[in-house]
Structures are given as C-alpha cells and as structure tokens.
Length: 67
Image: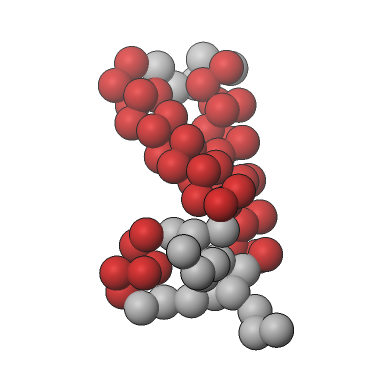
C-alpha cells in the first residue's frame, strides 16, 4: 500500500495513544471506556508505524510530504 501519513500526523497519533495508556495505567479511565479508548490507541499505533491510514484512503486524503 502507498503511504499516506506524514510525520506530524504520526507524532500526533502516537502522542494520543500514549496519553490514553497513561490515563489507563493511572486508573483515570476504566471499564468500557478504557476498552474503547484502548482499541483506538492500538489502531493509532498500528497506523502510525505502518504509515497507512485506511480512512485516508477511503476519503482520498494524504498528509504524506512529497518527495
């Protein structure tokens, strides 16, 4: 797949995932909310490391810098 995520987008997604993890391990969030946010955090991390966001592909968006 062609990469469609830029560096800034990746950093923002990793930061959000880290904040969710900190909130979970600090017992700020729990239960169903923790599961839902945990799933979002996992998706954010996977898409950040792969560099491809399926939603961007669907909507034709691309934040990747031109080479």
